[in-house]
Length: 471
Image (tube, rainbow, N blue to C red; front, side, top):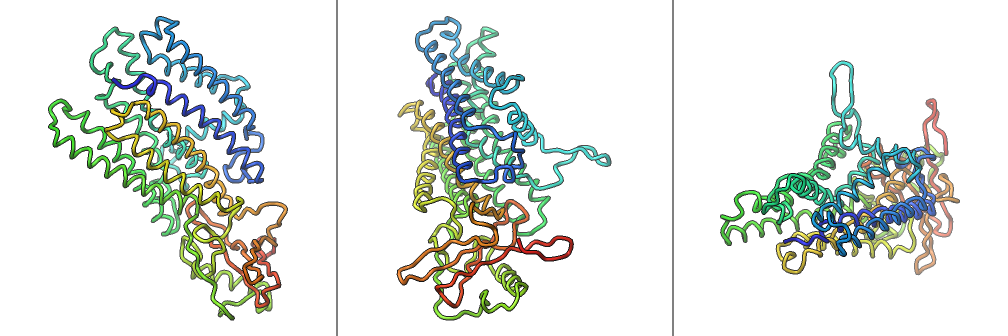
């Protein structure tokens, strides 16, 4: 029989870790000065405080510890007989704290979170002519951000479905083999586990239909395929236990497990690639700089700012969609613009993300039941920790795409200086163009002067009232 601890304590522990990780994310974002209001579309008075998140996580951890004490000592006979009540009580308390009009976890933030979750679950809008239709715009970043977080807690939703089904049998007084096996052969837990992936898949399809650029549409299709591989993992894993499991031969089980592992590995490798290249904007190759003069006009060769702007637009149009391969990358295999220091944290994040992706796959293997079902709890906690780390670089990349520049450097003079072995300096400036959608990464331009000891800046242009102005 699966471990009660792994089913009824792994999910709450992962939720507590996720909230604590969110507090750490918020602390780092504030210390970096990230414009959270612009990134998430949230008002300043709706942003929670790290202290409030830590307090909320500490309270839930205390509650979980008390439930564990009651669970192990059987101090309450009802919980001793119905272990699923541990998870049910935890969920009821969390929902009560989030919905009641009390000053817990910042009321305005809870309202903002509720509205965002509602749009994630029901991405519809009302039009007077056609009734209820899908959203008329691409999915906003905040909804993508929250729905991605839900995918890391997909197994928690499955555990909640198991607890509800078990409690239903306890209420009616019927405990069959389904109860003993933790509803292993019931369809509802698998649907609950797959629900976050279906939410993200619908978001990607909506963005595909609403995107204006062909490149954006193509990226949304690729992103939809990624979540489709996640659904395949759940589907293939559910088939052996849903379709006459007792009559299946050992050879068929082996074939099913092999297919399951192939789907899981495909999903993990695809997701790892998407994390690095698309969600973090990393993996850009080190294109070496060519010596001598180049055909591209520099700032000193441009007679006017208009010429500089036109040369910048020309470089943008000739660059690949994912990175600027026409200019040297100062940060090999990372990206042109890095906001965190030192850059070794990016390589460490890549390694950790890959390891935790593999751990997430192994948590679905058949031998986990032999090693111990408590390994599932470890995998759940590790996945939410990976998601919290993922948040750091996802929000950073979003800030870079929006053209945000760290203080005290201004937008008109932003550059990154790096001295090489010869003592010369290279200048990395942000592109003048700002992406029109979350999937359109900007192309930074490296503006190099003929005089290697002089610094050249690239002014950004905006068009106001038909007149080009510098900002």
